[in-house]
Each structure stands twice: as structure tokens, then as C-alpha cells.
Length: 193
Length: 193
View 1 (cartoon, chains in turn cyan, red):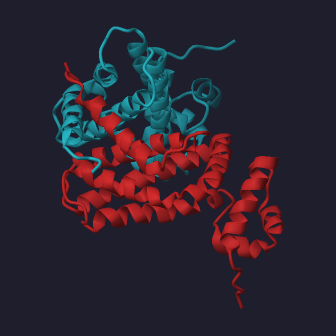
View 2 (tube, chains in turn brown, purple; view 1 turned 90 degrees about the vertical axis):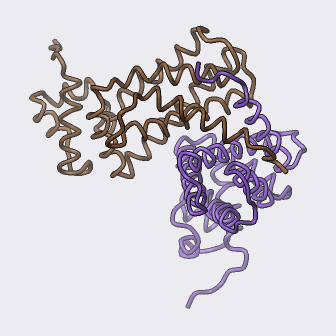
View 3 (cartoon, chains in turn blue, purple; view 1 turned 120 degrees about the vertical axis):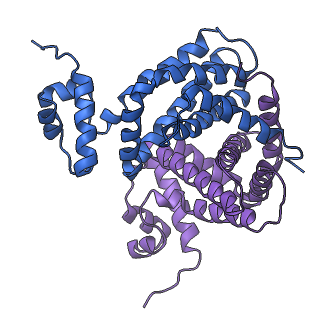
């Protein structure tokens, strides 16, 4: 019989992050994470496939949110407008009270090459899922892929700015600004002389 | 004393690609690649760090070419114009006589998840190197990263189209078209309503 541990997932995430920051990612074992969270290894593996996934588990929900927003058809219009609306709506996923956790998490990811790689691959998967959602709405290539990749680039740049110490704007506001920067950039004439 | 084997690098690449296509990437050993190329394992490791690198070795030269083109200052203008010029100049790297090799290579990469991952990471490294080259020319963030990521996206989409069986246009022409598609996409109004 499996006991349900309330808040187990969040406790494991917090414990893992503290240990990765203190000891390094390589040196931390799942047994130590479980112990620090007051849980068993078995509970750990009920929630996460491995110790890398602890830091990326929320991205699955994040990706589903994006894809559902696009699939809902709530926003009509050109492909990049659909993507921009989904990116900005997705900002609600990163509430301001998550900012300390997100900053801490990013510091750990950035200082471990294998975690940075995992993050890049997750972002590539996100772009692939968005492109598919756009094609499912009848948007042709190359527009679907260009819009999806541009949306993920804007998200990544905006997210990094939002995490910058001292930054006080909401993620959605930063995203709006970065979308406008992308528009100005591509509006510059004679790209292909 | 190290003997110089003329064309060793290209022979190893061709032999590796044939074996990966025939037996699968996992199942192929460096010893088999060397044997098929009529060379020793030692020669293999003089050219490539491991059996994945055989398929990605040219990307290092490709990346240097991009960065040098941007650093040369030959093209003035807005950031994305500088990047577009470098991407289009870089098309010369993929001569039409390399098309059969490139198609074969891409088929092998696409059918092996670990090779696809390596390719994504190489593309991310390319975007990072381009962004750095732009910052070295005094272009500020977020323009440097947005222009670099957009350039790599255009390259990836154009390269995939160029490899499509039956496609007869040059890579540079496809790239010009995809840059224009990106411009139309971002020119669409009210991205951030």
C-alpha cells in the first residue's frame, strides 16, 4: 500500500536544490535527498525518474500549459501573435513567490554543464511541441517552426532577465518588451542584400 | 613517428557513416570504422575524440567561419543584417557536391536520439558563439542573443529544406527565403495585446 505524503514533491525539490548548491550535483545521492526531506528513496522515485528530473519536473506542466493555450483556439491571428499570447499567459506559471526558488534553481543549473544541457534539450522539446500545436491549427511550415522557436527564444531571454537580482518587473512585462525587441530587430531593412 | 595518411579524415567519416547507417550507431565500434577505412584506431583518435564527433567535426570549422565573418566587420548595419550576411556567406561551406553526404549524415543523426541531442547542443553553442561575436562588436543585449538565435533558427530550417529530396535550390537561396519568412512573421501587428 502506497502512503500519500502531503507536499512530498515540493519537499524533495527543496531538499535536492539545497544539497546540489551545498555539495554539488554529482556528489549528491537520492538517498541523501530523501533523508533531508524526511522521506524514503521509494517516495523519491514515485515522483522523479532520477536526480536530474527533480529540477525539471515542473517544465512538463509548463509545456502542457503552452500547448493547451495554443490548441484552445482562444487567440486568433498570425502565428507569432498566437505564440506570444501563449508565452505571456504562461508567465502566470512563475508567480513572484516562486522567484527565490527559480533564482536558486537557475544558479544550480548554470553551474553544472550536464544540467545546462538538459535545460537546452527541454527548451528544444518545448519549441517542437509548440510547432506541432501550431501545425495542428493549420499553420504551415516554415511559419510554425519559426514562430515556435522565436517564442521560446523570447521566453528564455525574458526569463533570464526576470531572474536578474534587483529586477522588479513581472515576467509577463519583460516578455512583452522582448517580443517588441524582436520585432524591431527583424523590421530593420535589407536583411538579404 | 606519426605517419600522415592523406584523406584519412574524410575516409574515416565516410566509413563511419556507412557503418552507422548499416548497423546502427550504438553497435558500431571505432575499431570497425578504422578497419573499414583501412586505417588504425590510433589514426581515428588523432582525428576525432569519439565516435559521435565523426559526424560533428565539420561544425567546428563552420562555427569559426560564422564568427570570423561577424568579427571581420565586413558587414555594417543592424544586428540581424550582420547575422543574415554571415549565415548566407556560410552557405558556401555546404557545396552542392556535399549534398549526398549531408543527406546521408542527417538521416543517421535524425534516427539516433543521442545524435539528435548532440546536434541540438552544437546549434546552441553556435548561437552562443554568434551572440558573443555580436557583443564583441558592441551590440547590446537582448539584441545580440535575439539576432543570434534567430540566425541559427533560420539556418536550421533552411538546411532541413535544402536536404529535402528533390530540392534543387542552393542553400543560400533557401536561407534568403526563410529570413524573409521570419520578417513577415514578426511584422504581423499586435503581438503583445
